[in-house]
Length: 168
Image (cartoon, rainbow, N blue to C red; front, side):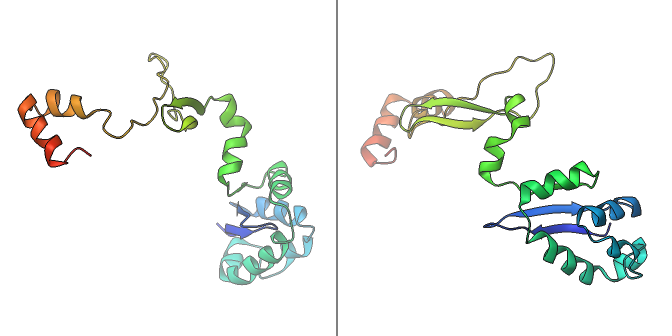
């Protein structure tokens, strides 16, 4: 596919992924860019020619995208049916309406750091109940479980580890 890449947008570290999977998507991209001459340029009019001249094409696209806001560009391209999506920052992901509706993030209370946001499972099975994520364990929280139940250590052995400083 040509173009097929990630292009710089205006703002700090803002990028957009764009792909034209066929000549029709390419022409729509040219329309959104307000550069219809790109679609008729002999270097870019057909896939094979675009591929042969992809470096020049990507330079033209970069010159266009780096002057544009990533959100506006994403809306325009997607609205025209051109496969594209911003390269999301952590802030973008946290504010994503689709992820919010799907319950992708949950807040849990951690005993040392307070309330934190965590990701939930990426998919939910229809015949399985959802289990809310638990906060990360505190240092040593599961020592007894691991030492006694999993490793089968005696009280004397655990005491030796404590005295040796191995459990600090």
